[in-house]
Image (cartoon, rainbow, N blue to C red; front, side):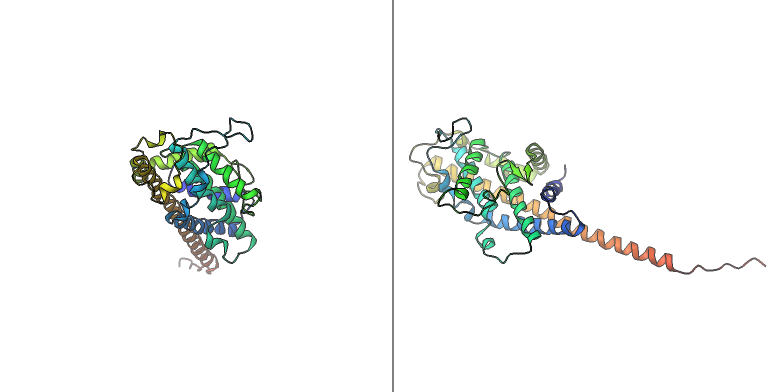
Length: 294
């Protein structure tokens, strides 16, 4: 599988979301893929990505093995780290960046494409995170839970993609996400990208992920530079920023593939037009009569 296939897969899912697959809209999908990926990369490079860490500091978390309303404890460092990064990605998915929320809206088709791209990027981010250090299904699920609560609960920040039914933990492109296909694509792609694979391996060089989360610890405090004397806290900061940087590089690469696809499509269209013009000239050129031998 080539690296370009992740961008191809992303665009394919957007078209499945109900976007007309006429050539005009295919161009719109690719252009928006490049634009939204750039927005996500810039978002990850800034501090907003980890500014929602407090949402993961609750002592008790909902758990799939518990009854509704019950909360589980005993989280590990890895659970908290995955939660922080996923909450950051889900804020982007659900509400977009602060500048994006205040920009002038485009036509309905463009806005529709944007929303489905944000949804798919969040699922792709989760799949990439699952291949990295500290992978945690509990952290991922709790991130979805807490963002959904903010989007649909009283006093929350309403109007996001979750509340409107456009995106969800198991919903993308108006149906079930092909999670196994996505995970397999991400795993194969990372396996071929030695540079990014090495960066992930560098972050894996710590056992902190399996450390039990201690009462009184707040991941938000660690990320703000407080409790610097704590060895585990320093490792947490290193892992979070290491993963944040690596994920940024990964999505830069996907954005680059989208940009290259746009260029290739434009060149192919140009070549086809040139070929058509040449064929038309050949067809309209008058035939020369040949003289009979004397």
